[in-house]
Image (cartoon, rainbow, N blue to C red; front, side, top):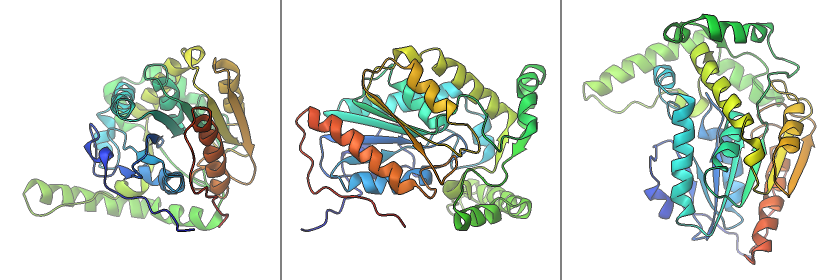
Length: 325
């Protein structure tokens, strides 16, 4: 049987608020899967899922959240309102162009998916490593100070207080963790900060195009300002979980280093969806879309979304299964 090769051109090229770092694949399908990376992350977190989902002859779009994939200053100028508005606007775009719309998000992206589903009608949700409480086994002691810091430090000064991401970076895969460790070393961060600053100045002066280092690997720090916005996102989404009624699959690792599996159970207990499925994984940490069980995550998404499609008489062609690498 001839393998299916998705194209990189199609209707999604007209996506509203599209960024150059967005990732999309087309199969001329009536079904689209919209993917949302985590805060401080990049669409690269979703590449493996995107390619696997596209092999099902579904269109796929991996967005770039406002303030991401450029410079940390751009992140500091955005709020959870900007992230929510961006996702809702793009989902409304695809809702008007596709018969079935599915959404999957990672970490804070999972919260954005849950929240958006209460505004835009979707046919299914993939909630991956949802982050409501920082209670993973590697949560730093400083997180206990967050509530006080967010209240006591003026918003205008919160950009100068930050947490530097450290090992294991949400990843159990040792080879990948080693690469991230090298990319997130203080020496590398300082060198690339200078490089990004100089490239930005050259671009402003019309001397070429510069691709920031954050475009491929995200930001290595969490400014207090951003953590405050994530906290606001958590509060807002948590208050509306009862309004979520789309079929929902929740996937989280039992070994999640950032947010324990109690977060997944919280979602399962509080959403109103009649159809909901909880999957707990072993042998991976928080960033399950790139870690050692990413093929299992993809397989579960294919099964769950495929089931919803079949219920609405959408045939699935050339079934394909991801392989463990």
